[in-house]
Amino acid sequence: MTTDTEEPALTIDELAARAGVTVRTIRFYGTKGLLPPPVLGPRRVGRYGGEHLARLALIEEFQRQGMTLAAIERHLRRLPPGLSARDLALHRAVVASWAPDTVETVTLEELERRAGRPLTGEEVERLAAMDVVERDGDAYRVDTGLLRLGVELLDVPLSPETVLAARTALLEHSRAAARDLSRLLREAVAERGTRDVKSLSAHMQPLVVQALLTTFQRSLREELREWLGGDAEGRGGAEGLSGRP
Image (cartoon, rainbow, N blue to C red; front, side):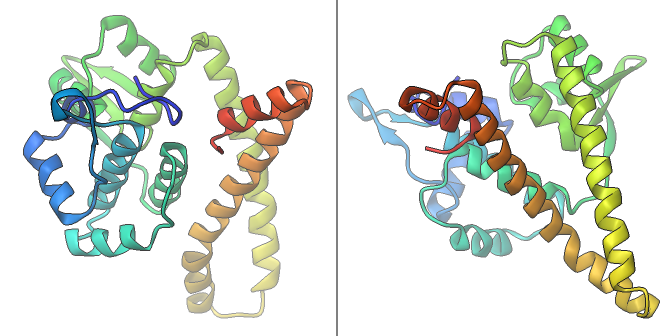
């Protein structure tokens, strides 16, 4: 496992396994400029890290929404340089918010391929406890929009009860924010026709999600600073946890 501050530690084969793609695909993305080059280690063996995994997840999300490779290339070129893995994950969350909820029934083999790693029975149970997967006979119903997040949470040293409590808190507050924003928008367009309202709603959704993610990230950073005492060491830890250098 790599983080934004660790040296890249994955070989191309390990990266392919984690991302659920082929080595050939990774090399192709590299030639197209969709992935940055690896860091060359001893014996000139390329090493990959969290940014590469995050970019592959972002590309997969674009493909799920039907974007062509040329369109994905154009979009990635417009991203600011130097984005961390957490920044890219935030961007992917915004992109994923444009897509409708998607639940698919897959085999365990396909579930592991999409998760990018083998899953133990206990890990599958933890994903089920987080409402990411549900057993359906010999197959699994999986919320594809939540799968990568759920898999990442498997490596977080928190109990399933804490994860579920956090999920409940996020759902309650996000729904309250959605209700308030919906009321404000309804009042703002009360005099407009149905077509204008639908057009405005489609335009505003990604902007509102981006705003919510950004404001939450900043609020979380401030909370972590207070929690860690606000000293220099605390600020560094808080910013690292919240995804900023």
